[in-house]
Image 1 (cartoon, rainbow, N blue to C red):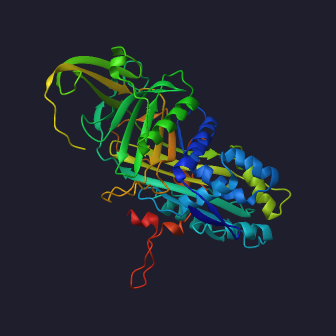
Image 2: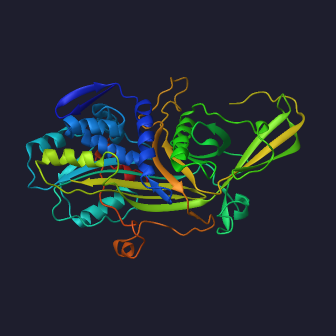
Image 3: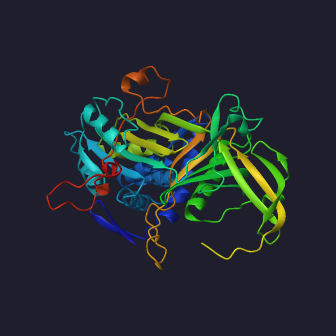
Length: 475
């Protein structure tokens, strides 16, 4: 049970984050990515959803009904879920939010909404450009270093921020790009790709899904706190259906849920676009003499985007709600998400700023049997979803299963259409403001950032030193 205060009223809501937020965010993600299309990109539907949730209590009447439809859950519940996530520190995912207002903005309704925001949301006057850039760098672990210039007429800025940087429990091996298969358009363009180690912490299998058909699945884990799942379907399957399957599978894998894995012995041998299935004699301990093994080959990739969310689901309504409490009859607004992610042999890192202005057992005897090996091939565009895990019972012997508020929450997702060579160790970061001027359209820096007081260390030293913030804890 979580008691959350909004606008001076305390609302008690039973908040089980994974049960209440995963499905709405997954539905929102489908529309979020659908608005971008098939181009290579990364995004954080969660970051956009959290911003809309914070706007929710500012809405009334028709605007509240529209935001409820966009969020996929009641506005008050969405606000409570956002407050819980932003106010709870996760070991590997930093989260924050901030609202800045013009010092001459004194609307009573605005003051009430700002006062009712969760305590973890930072408040203040509009900062200078230098302050914005510094905050961007700090809050995103240096992945996003600069924000676009702030317009002179800006009255209000609301922002959310998410960031992570992890190393895989077990790094990938390297393989020649031709292992992606003869039908892959990337096999000739790349030199090296990633291959899962023969034994270790990687998970790979073939699954049946309702919307995307049979898919190849790979999941890499970073400790007990983040799982990044890649899902590839047949080339003709629409990205929206692949994302729907990827979100379902990624959440199930991260939380130990059930998935419809297919037995390799139920599939025909041979070469397919998504996998190559072979069979060979082996010595096995299985009762039926049949053994299965999957490996996966997939490319490294990175992406940086500045998504225009002005017409994205929920944002026109959120802007109208903010304009209403500002007392503005005529207004202009912008809404953007600046995001960067990199998936490599050693780990995964990502950051997004969304803003709107305004076990062991005895071994059985061995016997002769047959081994089927599937090499899963991520050789054409596919979906990737990063899901946070927050199992807090691991260190407690005999303890009941207890999950933190971040357990099972999808944080970032990407459509991989422009892979990079796995052997390339070039550091690809966010461009400076000068560099971005010569870049491709839509690849600009970002706009806003959030300092999360709730993510600071919970205690101060006897010397009176200030507690460290979440982004400082990882240094």
